[in-house]
Length: 466
Image (cartoon, rainbow, N blue to C red; front, side, top):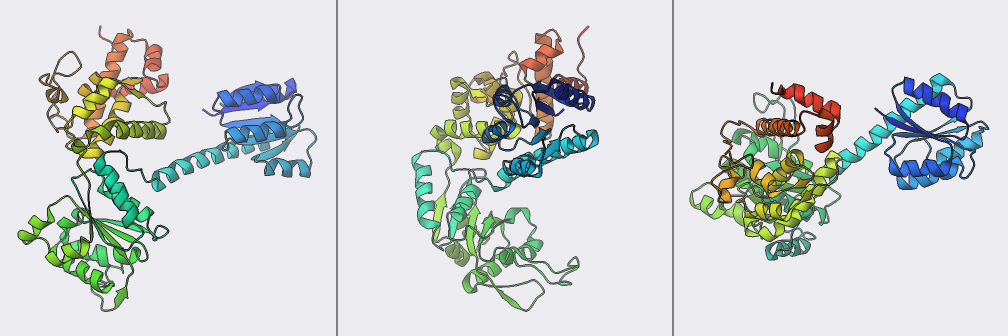
């Protein structure tokens, strides 16, 4: 339900607008002056403000300017009994969504309110999407190995040197590649990523170099390959150790001659691409086993950056965890939770088989399932870094979970969603029983809306014990 504020010094206007808007199911506050209206705007999250222009203490234009300085995306509809074209233009220049004359036409007012709210929602959604798409996380940590990586990136990025990034899965190889691109002279051109392990060997050549229509059975139209898409920019070949030998030969030729040929084509295409590769494999061993070309290895390995495992830099875990905490809470639109010292020490003690990626998932899980402060017991209860062994075992308590010392078997969960649903159900059930099934108090305790809690109770089929 949208929340609106009416600022107008005429009681009759405020009462009329309030009655109309509440009839349309909006939540409405009203105030008779600009100074107090501005205070309400500071304290509350309104979706729209309807503001009179001529008022005592502070006129509507001042309220508009001051409010937008605090909350630039807050839609304003200005109202005036002395409306002129000049006034409307001035209000628009100062950031108002629209201008309505008194007495307002009911239908026009409701349409304007609806349009203003739609615009506000679109602005918010666009900002969130842009942040998610464009944001490149910082390389977090101050350990010697991480500082060395940062220094290497600063030196290497402005050059055209090829880079081979090595390290375990989830360690942050992709992030290193992104920062090399961001700090390079090609930053304004595209960064194209290819996961060589995720593409079947018979399709990898088409993915990289493109194909002509009819070149094979399913080639119903021409396709542009990743090398051409990355022309002028950077091509990131992730998990290159899984690339087929035939594709390796073509990549080698592309690196040597800066030319590619589409599958089924004859015309050579010139490409200007900087290649960054990454792998979790020991390429020298792969070369010995005949799975990787020595000449391609030397072409790619001009600069080598090794990303250490998270367990090799545990002192960085608090910084990374806190960053993930703030980021995820921000994406969820919720207050940032706290992590106790005991919980942080418990995080540092875990084996982190999934590396930094697992830490991110772990923090997200703790945010969803924990109270305002994440405790050591939460880490023990909700973490599963070993893929089937309870966390308690890693801390020497024989696998006993925090829920009364009963070990929880993870074998019964086929995926994370099943585990999350189970944990969420048990958590809500525990809180309801603790509060003697007082739904309002439980909703306040776990900081969700009462209607949302009712939905969860129905979803999980929770019932009060007789």
